[in-house]
Image (cartoon, rainbow, N blue to C red):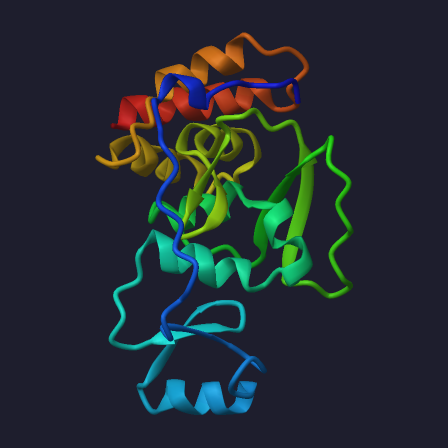
Length: 207
């Protein structure tokens, strides 16, 4: 896909990084074993968030904790080189269901080690502009407009349009789908472009 500079029109500023989970999130084998975490979930002390990540049952999940739980599925050496994207990014923003696999992107100009076999994540090399990624809880996540573009192009029929509607309606995201349509129309050689435009039009009419 050609380079799309979507974030520049939003005036977004990165979220203040949160460098610690504060004992809220737990990953199997960091402190507790998978069996211990599952036992605590059965006892009502924890709830599963993403993959093998769990959160305290009394913790209100917000975008920061969702992003931090998802990135725990990625080896520590890769976390600074990737961003949560597509359905995973929309889930972080509270606008999509949790995907079965963590969706990641990395800039195609960067040298990035491949994910290990049987990883819980799927990584895509793409062109990323300077405003396409923001920090959410100290984790790289594609910005709302870039997320909307990716959902329109790559999303599945059963959740793409409802997710676009939620992204556009979210009061804090400033995700104007008209800007996404304009960027997509101005870009050549995008596989599935007509389908993506139809999804965006459907979402705008639904909103």
